[in-house]
Image (cartoon, rainbow, N blue to C red; front, side, top):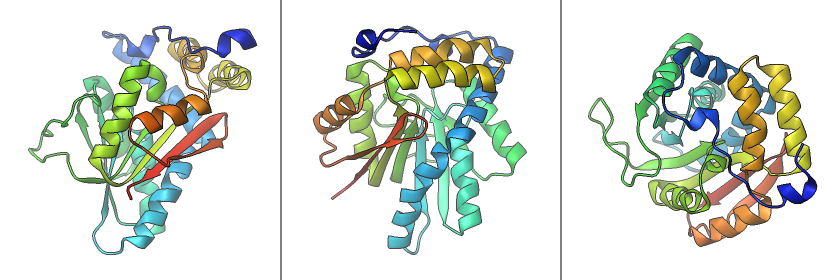
Length: 246
């Protein structure tokens, strides 16, 4: 386990999931493991609460929600299902740079009976490209991302926050890991208890080493133009950043 001093400084070591050419079977197994971990963390419920609150203040047309770097689509699917159970009108979409992840997300949505749209796109591109059905993925009310920022360099993470603010009419939400000894211990143990994927076992602890601390997130949000962003600590050693436009 890294020392306390080493975790004071962010250290980005390339993760397996970030490499091109991952074996499709290994990729699918890793995404399934992450799905179990995220289900236990209840991060989707934490993201849904402020979306539901916004919907109650904006009656009428459904809110359009975009999840950047959606991976296997777990957050998108969870939000769609939570909205259905709560009678909250949402149109939920997800994008990911990986064609394999998008294909898995579509399969997962069909398997779980969720109505959601997925398309391939790079979260760092502004504006996002048109989707495969010709619909422009623009004008979202809410833009979210979960467990993505820690994969990026400091500059790119700041760029993503700024792009999220430009793409969101009302609300930006970010869920991610906190870099700390507790976070590292939870990642090491949790990945081994909840997944058989060697990729998840490898990447989980590395993700914590590459994550931000709360003060770093706050400073980065300010630089990205998200003045007044609220950042709260969540289980299991994660944070939820929320920013509302004016």
